[in-house]
Structures are given as structure tokens and as C-alpha cells.
Length: 95
Ligand SMILES: [Ca+2]
Ligand SMILES: [Ca+2]
Image (cartoon, rainbow, N blue to C red; front, side, top):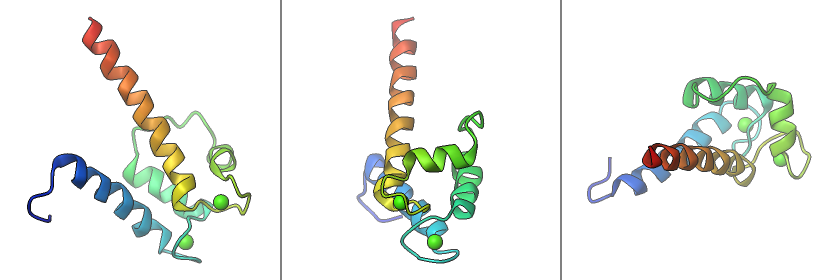
């Protein structure tokens, strides 16, 4: 871990690194195939609801319709998760 980094900076690095770790497993190194995406979800986001089928989630995030996720598309999911987390914390504070 780099010295002098704040927790938030480290968290950002972690998110970016987790994307590239999985994107580099097969095919293009800059995008996630559905298999890579599946592995990423299982390994890095195990608490994410499994209610939505993988293919539906991928389709929803895949803005340019190439059946793979680039970082900007992946970031949409992170944004949604962050929003959900924010709501959780806000509700907790109220109680
Ligand atoms: Ca890839
Ligand atoms: Ca895409």
C-alpha cells in the first residue's frame, strides 16, 4: 500500500485494480466478458444480490452493446452500489 494515501484513495485504487485483475483474464484486457464479470462479482462483490440474473445485469450495464463491460460501464454498477450503501447509512443514522 502506498504511503500517505487516505482510506478513500485506497478504496478507489482497490476498485480500479479489481476491474483490471479480472478484465485481464481472457480476451481483451480492457473489458470484462460475461465470464470475467461473473468471477468479479463472486470474488469481489459476494454480498451483491443474486436476484438479478448475470446476463440481465450485464445487458443493463453494457451501454455500447458489445457484450463486454469497459471500466465506465462497470463504474455504473459501483455507483449504484455506492448509492444503495449511502441510503443504508442514512437510514441507520435516523434511528
Ligand atoms: Ca477481458
Ligand atoms: Ca460494453
